[in-house]
Length: 224
Image 1 (cartoon, helix red, strand yellow):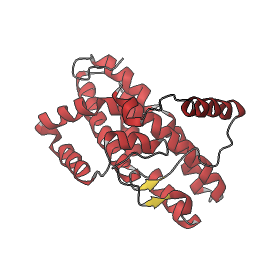
Image 2: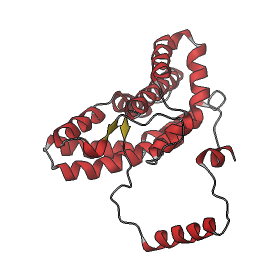
Image 3: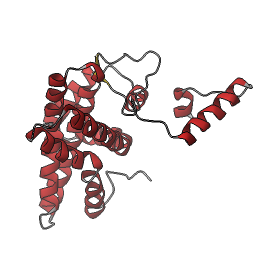
């Protein structure tokens, strides 16, 4: 069930925020940082990036349904003018549609949405390592640490207000990370071995379609 951000209590907001800051992307980022420090192999970095990207996908699923309400709060308060400026910058640079961003996270694309300019799979080892460093140092993780510290602080009205304000900052950082990744073409499932049962399911669906069954587009599924 989607929470009403503007109406939930401070405790409800804190409980929800706790679940957000404990998503898998944050533990993956810690592992990625360790790998970079110890100058791990390209293969190790590739494996961890797959986990990182899947964690980003999960975080996006959790946050995207709140985008309209959170951005509405940011727009309506002068206290968040600095965040509103950053949101405007994100919107002006976005090239993909909401559905296109959802498809891209799954290594897919939809008609009329631009194809990402950079294919992760063709990056040189040095270029890939640079990308990993950039992601590991993303402002989202700095904001997340501030959120965690606020959650560990004894609750008060002041702390509750600061927690919400920091979460809105965190959300804008998430939008900026998503904008950055928009330029990268990456399929986290590429190269993974298909399970026999999945292959059987694909064959059944193929037979269904060839025998006259209807195949739905991603747009039709989203609309439904």
